[in-house]
Length: 219
Image (tube, rainbow, N blue to C red; front, top):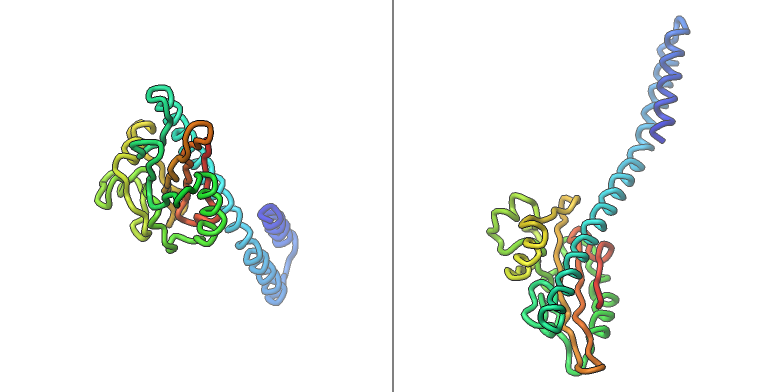
C-alpha cells in the first residue's frame, strides 16, 4: 500500500510539471484521491506495527523461557530436583496457582490455560496470580526506569524470583514493546512422587494481552 501511494504521488508530480493550466476542480479531485489513499493505508500501517510488536514480545518471552529452563537444569544437576526461579523447592508455587487435592501438575496447567488465562485479554484483567519477572517491588527504581513493570496492573511481586531472573540476564531486565505491556510469570508446583512425579510448570505472559501473548514451559 505504501509503495502504491509513492507511485501515485510521483505520477501526480510529473503530471503537474508536464500539464499547463490545471483547473482548480482537477486539483481538488486529485487531492481528495490522495487523502482517500492515505486514510485507507493508515489502518494497514497500524496493523503492521502491532504485528511487529507482538513478534518482538514473543521473542522476549522465548528468552525468558530459555533462562528459566537453564535455571531448572542447573538446579537439577546441583540439587537432584529441578526448580524454577522463585521456587524454594520443586513442589512450591510461585504466584497464586496451587494444586488441588491429588491434582497433578499437567492437569492444573491445562485447566488454567484453557479456562482461566484464555479470558484475560488485556492489562486491566485480574492478574494477581502472576508475579513480575524482573521487578522486586512496586518501588523498584531499576524496574520503574527500565519499564519492566506496568503499575496499572494487578501483578504481584516475588523478590527471590525477580533476583534470580535478573542475575541470569546480567543484572538487567527486558521491557515489553507495548505501552501497557510487561512480563510476568507464575509457577505451578511439581506433583507426585517416584515414577509418577511431575516437574513444575512455568507460564510467562505479556500483560498487554495475556490470553494471546503467553508461553509455558513443561519439563
